[in-house]
Image (tube, rainbow, N blue to C red; front, side, top):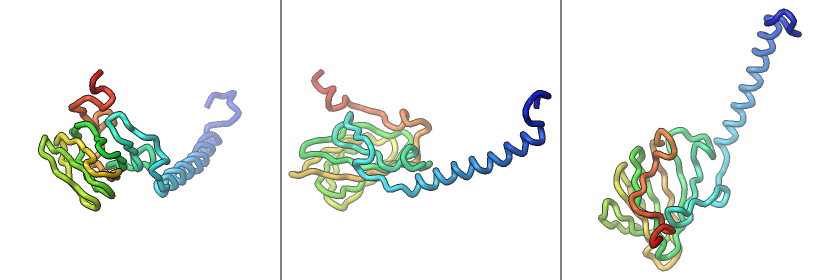
Length: 164
């Protein structure tokens, strides 16, 4: 400490040690509270650029997850998610309701209600609702990419880019 400081080195050290414990306890409380938070479909913003109404529900940003993320996508009849792949992550897809056609590297697979599909990393995939009503699917990806912008590689234009 400087000689004209209001506290000497010992007093400042004591203040830092006391406040550090208090601040770390506050941070711990906030992190633990966030990890117990329930996140609803409409609690997070929609991502519609690849098609559908996609919501990332559990992620590092929403609950502090460190190894993956989970979300859901709602697709109207005929609506789809444009083709992409994940260079770092495996994807687990569960159809809660409706019927989806999932193209895996160009090979179609149909999933009905309460069926699941594993999408390995680097496999191109697109989803299309081939049923008469809305489809709701839950997805989980793990592990996380080193940075969020590296997590998806798009292999075809987004729906709003088609024809422009």
